[in-house]
Image (cartoon, rainbow, N blue to C red; front, side, top):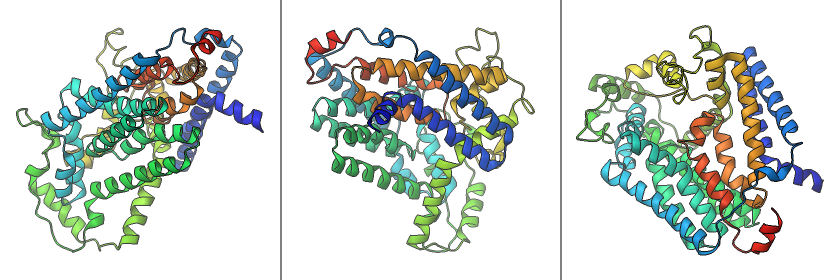
Length: 436
């Protein structure tokens, strides 16, 4: 049993990728889309087989040859943490990122959704990338490394700022992405009480954001709300023109509010049950359902992109970049678009490859995922306690995001470098040299 546990932990990147694939397959099966189920099963089989083949190579060739230690490592942790705090404050102050106050004034779900949308949609491109890297990489990874190196006060400070920032982005996954790396490290250190506190904090914050994003769940009286559209676009930059699709007319909002007002109010238990069921469906079924939608679209409704669906590849194949996630949203959710909502149907990482190159792309994506899992296992051979805290959230995010986007603009590549090259706080340096 101990050998099995050690093997699972050593190869945890592969194990998590297979878990995500199984999770997607179950969601696709719930929709009855047999082609999607078959495609995901093929992906999982190629992923496991490729990894098994790669694992026959010598393990030392991918290990880092130099590590950051001592005062330099501490300075790096401070730098990353302070950079995350600075970017979050910049978003709040310069770009009106205090969305919690605006969302609290929304009278219906559409108004709350627009507040959330405008928290990032109106940002300049550089700030959008900075915001994403900060929330997904800088805050959680800086906290984990600070905790790992014994800088507990710094870790708590980083997590506090990060929790406020993720809440202001109004993304229910934000608190989980922030705290999950810390929870995993605390479990590895057997600090179960603190892990429980962090887990409770994440759950409570997610539930609070769920109620905030659904004002009708907290409505206690039946009345037609009069909504001021000016409060809906609070997240927009005042000096910049607002995208016409991000503004809801008073007529649309009033109609939405009127429709919602005629629904009977729920008691506290009913509200929690409704919100819990919604979150459970969103987590368990929707990722596989979305993958099924992509299998339905390509190639029946849209032709394969042959590289045009990758931003970095489109110029090389001389075509205009096609944001399939945005295009599919516009196709499937015309009612929401008519109300001014913008969105994307973000599918699992292998679906972008399928949308571009069909079944060969799906197989090639499985091979690439196996290579990533194998390299991660090698790179964290010296610091195995950081393998899951650094990488687990990104692997789970592969259920709704592209691999290349995750590695580059999503911050995963930066997180890997920070986690793999920072020297352990207590182990003797001679041990690391001997391990080379």
